[in-house]
Amino acid sequence: MRLFFARPIMMLMLTLAGFSSYAAENSIQISPENIANLGVILGKPEQVKQIPVLSAPAKVVVPPTQEYIVSAAQAGVIDKLNVAIGDKVIKGQVLARLNSPDLLTLQREYLKAVSELQLSAATFQRDKKLVEEGVIADRRWQETRIQHNSFVSEVNEHKQLLEIAGMTDSEITQLAKTHRLTRQLNVRAPIIGVVLERMAVAGTRIDMMAPLYRVANLDQLWLEIAIPQERMDSIKIGDRVVVENAVGATGRSPSAKITLLGQSVNPDNQTIMARAALEPLHDKAPLRPGQRLNTRIIQASDKAVFKIPNTAIAQNEGKAYIFIRKPEGFLVTPITVVGKQDDQSIVSGELTADDEIAVNGAVALKANWLGLGSDE
Image (cartoon, rainbow, N blue to C red; front, side, top):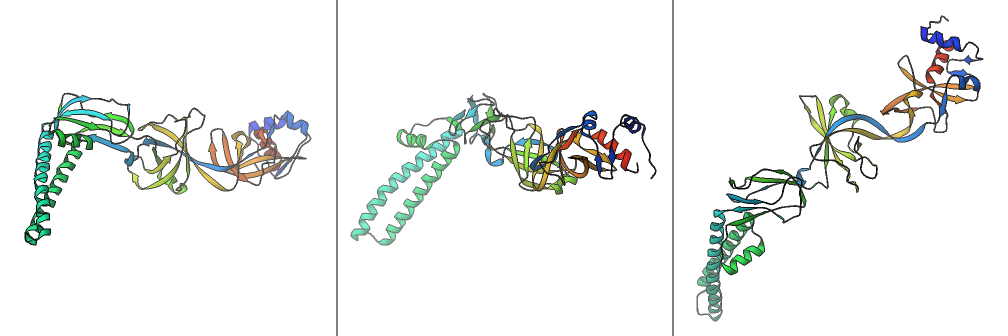
């Protein structure tokens, strides 16, 4: 068998000339003293149940059901803005106050409808009594009842218009009692949340439905992850997503689960969007809507996989190997690298959590192995 040696390997082999070593094709026989001289450090692989599939950039977004644009239901002039960006608000809190002449018209129409209903109610009760006594014809009673129902509907319609404009039930009830009109219209928060954006300035005139604030409930957030299209087949619904470089007060990183895989490719960067719902943390890790960050997608493994240092892996002819300690030396064992995480790799192969492997010094063991038992 003809042997070829690179210069670095030959130099290392000269230091091994005094070793009583024997290497077979898949094993190395070496004494404990020579193991120490080679600087080999032993350790055990850590069995894990999850595999890091890939790392990908992501953006924090608010689910559509958790975000609202607060707008003015009537045209008018902004008298006052009560909250600013970042303020927390509760449902029903007054965010802004408008001076709206159009509100006067709505109130006047409502009071007119209420007055007509009151008159109709008197006629309704009178004709009801007369028809029971047989004084009036049934046809007249039917006409009276239909007209009364029409007035009831009209009052309900005008009341709903006032509610849409922003008046509360108590304010409408007070209006019906006092008949006192007001141009002051309060714009209230529709949810408990945080003000993300202010879109108006006090003192300016705005049209109907003009936006004033953007408010969102941040209890639930999503991640929109950009997955390279060639890796999309390796991602599944339910895969776990870990946010890198974002740790809460308890030391935990925010995590999420993939709930949607997009069906279209972004033509600008050839990525596909995957959506993941963030799991709520009690310590409120610092994630904000619009934030861009790095994520790591992790899948559950249905077979035995192990976490080992990258320094424990030796490469030869495009394949990966580790060195398992045996009484006579080391067993050269092929492995498959199924994932990487920082300075460690996730591997599968014929090993167990009880095996001792060379976590340092794999380069020296590889030189020994190749120099005595390979065609290189």
